[in-house]
Image (cartoon, rainbow, N blue to C red):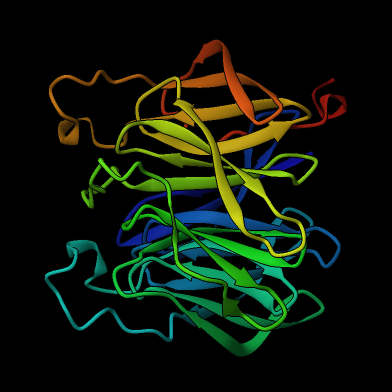
Length: 303
């Protein structure tokens, strides 16, 4: 088995290839600065990397363990003209790359856009479409479920619902925070991740302002989200969510402890929750330094 991971350095980052059985790095390749997300197209043997500080997406063709034929696609968008909105929107900042019916989608926190790239045999052939969001949104991740795209906006701390086939926004942004809580637009304090339950009836989103997990019921016909419940995330600054049956694993990792309020503790861990009927119940914690992401590996590869 093989693990592909990002090495988040600047001005240039790297994609590292690790053999699971030996734990050894077997290959690597240079990409744009601060690479933050990978999408592996196993069927077409391609790998795609979003680079936050590089402002681009790099695609590779896999040849065994080797990353070959790199092609780089700079973000075509421009930051908002109002520079007072947020210092993190001074330039394009791709944050997530994932497949959709329109090709590869790349969320760009710095330009308030989601860019789509046409594919041929898993390789991008050019820019295909743009989804423009409201100014200052700061799109971070997207989730495709049942013909709808759910965009979680880090800076305004809400979810934009989009019809996938037409890329039409469906109504106003759905807020993650109660009306009495003002969104914090500081670095590492906004909305961070979104996931669907295995049955697709619920959407769970993480916010790092009050460190909470917010559950929404999802209307399968219209895609509309209705607030259902909220619960503490089990640690400071939840970054990644992943479901395994009716269990939810939440990675909590403080990249910049100096940015935390003095009353918050540095709690690197994976928090484990039981999910039932739209309610999350904290079950246990797994201590883990720098828990940025959780993934499952087939145990057969570890034998």
